[in-house]
Every structure is written in structure tokens, then in C-alpha cells.
Amino acid sequence: MQLEQYAELISEMINRLEPLHVLDYGCGPDVALAKALKVKHAFKYQAYDREVPRFWDIPFPADVVVCTKMLGGLEDLDAEDVLDDLKRVTLGVCFMVITGSQMPAVWWLPRIMVRFDLQTYQVAGDDSFYAVAYAHPKVIENEAGEKL
Image 1 (cartoon, rainbow, N blue to C red):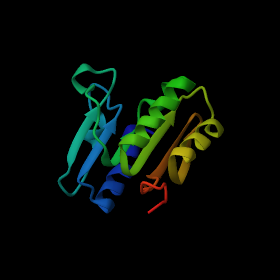
Image 2 (image 1 turned 180 degrees about the vertical axis):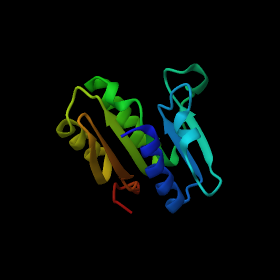
Image 3 (image 1 turned 60 degrees about the vertical axis):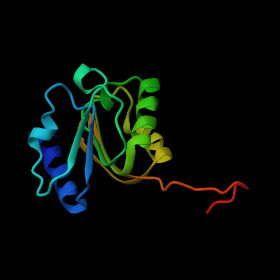
């Protein structure tokens, strides 16, 4: 799938969920996803990319997090760190695309499921798939360690 096709899926998701804040994690220098979205309501768009100086400020948590470019190119330890950070910044839904990875889906999926509530994943080509996952609910404990 090409970015335009992902943008269509992501636009549909944003139009249904009506989030106030969308984070494009690994946006690239051209913020191509932001230009391709067709969204019917206003929201805060935050661009983050650790390789692009103007977008490398630490991202704030967002209602919807989209990561379409960077996961496939990561080595396993970097991928674990990025998945941890995606978990940190996802308040609601995370849309992840893995393309051209050295690690197969059977490597990725358990790592995604440990961090998120996986809703779906779809093979999108010979070397790519996407996953849609919800943030795990935050567990609040009192001083005695009891879950509230």
C-alpha cells in the first residue's frame, strides 16, 4: 500500500473518532501524511521525527498516534524502544505501519500486543502490514497497592 491509501484509512479513523490531538510519529521532513489527510473536523496536528531537527522535540501524548514510516527500518533494539515510546504517547488509538522490516510480523505482533490492545492487523503487501491498537487502560493503585 502507498501512503495515499493509508491516508484514506487514517482519515476515516480520524473522522469517526474525532480526536482533538493527532501525533504523526516519524513524520519525515515533508509531513506527507498531513498533506494527504482528508479530515472533516479541526484537530491539533503534531509532527515528530527524531531524524528531522525541526520535528525532534519530545512528543506529547495524543488521542490518535500514527506511525507510517519509521518502524520497518529499525533494528530490533531500536524497535523495542520506539514501541515503548509509542505506548507512552498513545492515549487512545495507535495506527502502525511496518514496511520492509528485517523482522517478520511474528516478531512484531507479540511486541505490539504486550504494549497495546491490538484490534486488527492487515497484511498490505509482500513486506508490509499495518496494525491498529488501543492504548492499554491505565491502572491506578492506592498507597496499599490495591487497584482502584
